[in-house]
Image 1: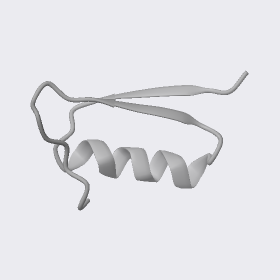
Image 2 (image 1 turned 90 degrees about the vertical axis):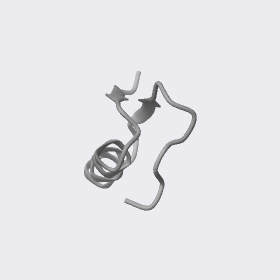
Image 3 (image 1 turned 180 degrees about the horizontal axis):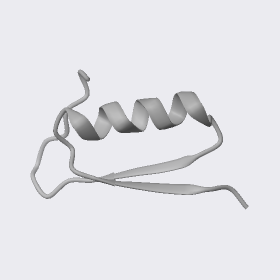
Length: 43
């Protein structure tokens, strides 16, 4: 079973952390939780 990562916050830091986690371990299952309507994807 793979590892799961949950990132709280979809501003610039959330997707940036997700991208770094993906670079470190491509097999991770990553979820970003954001309260608002929009998530940054330009990080």
